Image (cartoon, rainbow, N blue to C red; front, side, top):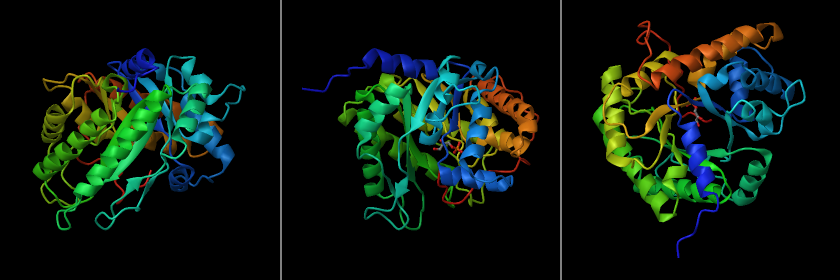
Length: 358
Ligand code: 13P
């Protein structure tokens, strides 16, 4: 007999709150190593107090709840407090923002795929960890699987697609059994020379495998969020695509693969610049035929300006919070197709890093 969902109604409510039109997710779940790279760019030391101060700035931004429905935290932040003694999680939930938690342990090269392919680690003990996070007040989780396109070697291999789809489905099922709505994130990196048509073909294959695995593992799609990449030509493809082409390719891919039962699709930014991520999302939300909320779950594309404005100084907190609100508002409008760009997309510097590790 198929397993039941003890948290059925709550999972559906959580996913639908996150998918509220006009809002999206702030991914502030950088691991200690990754936030260190961000801090290095602004000459800030990567120590516990600086990480705490930075995350406090994010979660206490006044008005954030108008554009942000959920914030993903790293374990350290989920256990941390702000200056007035409240937990970071309380700061969010008291304003109706759902607190989420990164539960994966990162991609590793632990199977016989093609050179450089990975499967994400972290299923061991996940049921125990998920139950603890639920007790702490988290209501959703994130797991990032990473795939790459390399036309010459044939990546992604069938094995990498299968292993990552099954791992995502096992993670999602374990989270749902413990009351956490899972963000299912099969990220296909922007690295590569492939064109947009190839990107569509590979994305369709990967998304279809993920949905099939979710069904096999009895995952409740109504209580689940998908976090895909936007479908773009490879970073080294000589033929660039317009925002309209990218929006069309991405929505076409998702329409071919993602059932309407899944309430919300929240894109990662994946190395797109802040402005690109907003403009592409806005273009998607002008297209017809979207049975899901089409929104964002950005890390870099919501935080680049914030980090620069902050630069590690308490005096700069108001300016950094203003920068966060500006990006959050722009992306909130983009989920409604109402963002007016100032036309800086083409010149805007990309946040792309080869073989990105989160
Ligand atoms: P980026 O938006 O920086 O790609 O990060 C989102 C994320 O959470 C990746 O797992």
